[in-house]
Image: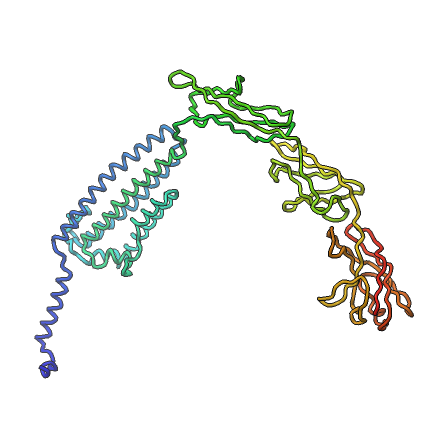
Length: 506
């Protein structure tokens, strides 16, 4: 046996093996007539479904048209969208129908029937022509794009219905199969012609069914904003329940459901209120209540009454004004104020300053005095379109208090000092500064403008600016005492101040 195993095959054996392979392939490719007849039955059933859908869709469009004639203002927009759905559906349906006819003509040639029913195809078991037309000639790519565009069109129309969007994405999905085949390959490659036509008919059936779904959805949107009620309730809708003395209280008295053919009567107490608009001049402060009823004639001629009750508050004009820094206003700096009016939104509050300016920055007002003596701050609130005075107050204007002079040495860790001991090296490059120190109540920037340097044995030297004279400091020796007199500084109020003297021992 081992010798025979190494013997080469004879030509006859090779031929028998080749015939076996061909036979096996033919058996694998052969599709039974029962399966092909099954495709015919499915395709025929799908066509009957399409016919039923066409009848249903026609009735739906006719009903839509009738609604538009009855109420064009309400229905027209949605009817136009429904017409667009019909056009898009017809276009893609017709494209698929022509696609089927073309592949049937390729397979049946002169014997091809104009109808795309599977039962009328001669070469039902043909495995090549669908792939030739769809894949080799590139028509499958066009078909896939048409189906995807139609799917996206339906999804966009159903923007307020996620469930329908998900449904259309699933029905018209063109994703790859689990084994990685493209949508086109899965449908056309190696598939019997009858199977391909049946699959395409299934897409046509889905198009007609989806068309009906979307048009019905659009039709439902024509009355989506309508309210259906089974209870009528009286309502009082005031413009505001808080009123400033001198203003007006206004309220709309309505029914929660209204029949335009029946005009109700509105009464506060026993006084009729025209069109349900109740208005009172508010001359006194306090809380006020009122009650009444709405009288509505019924279909049987009887009058039904719906009672209501409400209240409102009339307050004295008031404003909350506080100085975030101090209870005075200083010249030359930003004075921060928190200003509000109870019951009024911040955007409706405004400030006017007599003798100064006001600017809103964030949730604060920056007040700057432009005169000496006193300024007046007035607060206004916009109510019912009018600026009403809410109050305010007068504030004294003062100049900033004098700061304290310090020597600021060089180096990042050097701290300003008022006097004491410093080395000649530390003194070199130092400068004078003026501030309120760590306990400052008001933030203000001051600039030293001049001072005089005095030391025993040296001529006094007056310096302009804030830096110590380098030539003067270089003449000082250890043990000398440096006096800095006549220190002048200017603040944001532009006033020059005398800050006294500083004594430094070296």
